[in-house]
Amino acid sequence: MAIHIKTPEDIEKMRIAGRLASEVLDYITPFIKPGVTTEELDRLCHDYMVNVQGTIPAPLNYAPDGHNPYPKSVCTSINNVICHGIPNEKPLKNGDMLNIDVTVIKDGYHGDTSRMFFSGDVSPHARRLAKITYECMWLGIEKVKPGACLGDIGYVIQQHAENSGYSVVQEFCGHGIGKKFHEEPQVLHYGRPGTGPKLEPGMIFTIEPMINQGKRHLKIMSDGWTVVTKDRSLSAQWEHTVLVTETGYEILTQSAGTPAKPQIR
Image (tube, rainbow, N blue to C red):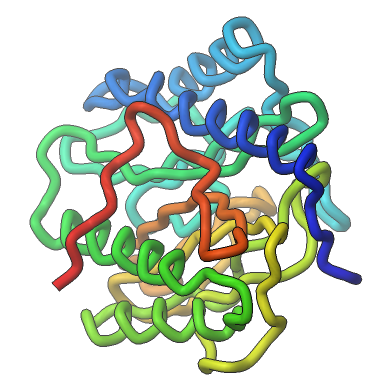
């Protein structure tokens, strides 16, 4: 499968979809606290997407080959859940860390982003994992420019994670995105510099490292979606959708509440 180079018209539509996806995360932020259920967070996000934004929640009933349809409008991954956690009626506890992954469809184009959130007072080691994972994403983004290789992105993410004492999930990765939810290329969060496809202006893809506090190994739960760490250690993830420009990159999933670029020492 070839990597689709987006037209200026595509890019403008992707900017809108990306901003809207990020605004869902802005909207839901004040609701995240001990006692709220992820079912309620999902309902709030769904209503905001459909009734306020006029967007379609891409995960709802999404069914790639071999999967049952995903039953909710966002993914909520708590503590040792790596990705694709399904919202449910269990209340958040004080000290839980949570990833919310949002993908909206607007005028046929997808915007995809996720952030980490904290429920009440979380432990210093959970905060550190979320911080390092955020830095990993940004280090990967900073490698995006024409002529660079996808392996450059994966390498810098893996180095920062492993040098911080963590591991990188290898079975799930970033992806091209546009009119389809998942397109070429696959964006691995590990690798070697100078390997993989060369980046060209007009490419759009996600960078979404999943970093584990323990070992990288995982298992998929019986619902067919929820992915957890095999050793039950904490996992964190952040995600942006990124455009390759003529001179570097543009992050398409930004809004008023997007966390600032980190100062990485």
